[in-house]
Amino acid sequence: MRRKVTVVGSGNVGATVAHRLVDKQLADVVMIDILEGIPQGKGLDLLEAGPIEGYDCKVRGTNDYADTRNSDLVVMTAGFPRKPGMSRDDLLKANYEVVKAAMEQAVKYSPDSILIVVTNPLDAMAQTAFKVSGFSKNRVIGMAGVLDTARYRTFIAEALNVSVQNVQGFVLGGHGDTMVPVPRYTTVAGIPVGELMAKDKLDAIIKRTAGGGAEIVNLLKAGSAYYAPSAAVVEMIDAIFNDRKKILPCAAYLEGEYGINGLFVGVPVKLGARGIEQIIEIKLTAEEQKALEKSAASVKELIEIIKL
Image (cartoon, rainbow, N blue to C red):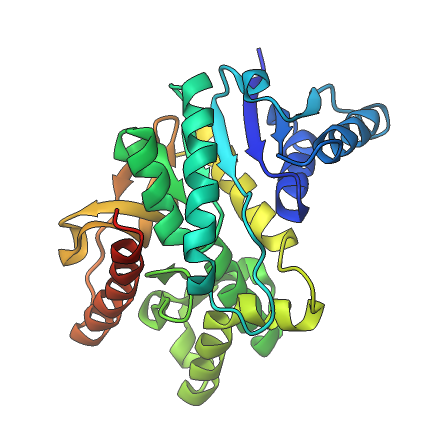
């Protein structure tokens, strides 16, 4: 019996998540949206691609949460889009209401599901889903670090003219301007990146990574990234559904790890069948710890605004 995934939101991110899920034959998919016709049309279009692509996964679009019943996993992508010049913080109050309403309905029909939150501002929206759902912390995960790390690895590979598969590293902290890449743990085919690249060049890549989402928003003029974010979500779902015990950077609820308590912050976690099965604590320098705490403080400010 195939797994079932509900994707809340049938915009570019949601529809592309659905597309990648069925292409990889990971799950049947229900796309739900408040807009009538859009999820139904995109769902039918994806279903009709099955005979050509060779997948038997079922895809449907709906406006009724009853159709999402008994989902194994729920992906929250719905929300107001980020526009040029708009910070993630500008989205806060509007998207809080969207996430709160959607999560109340989703968990009513799928009380045993795992939640992956994509809506921005990511860390605060993950906290919203956690509070609204009442789920255990291992079942609520924010997608941020996988995407930020992919951007970081892309820029390093591009600068060194090597395969992206050779570049390993991760990005910690909140999803936004205060994210914390950790060059000490970044390698290229096992070689520390500092041995292959001058510090000023790496610093420029780190700065570009922090502004990676805004760079795409400014180029598109209308809309935001969706190919890489959807790929990041599906990598997480694959790790969960196939119980891979894969270590990936995700927004997780911390209770004292890294000296941070009661907040969703991006850290390395082990993803398996139960969701977050372990938070991996790595040793940070004083400077790195300070940067992570600064990132957590910016998340806390958002949480205080929406009174979570």
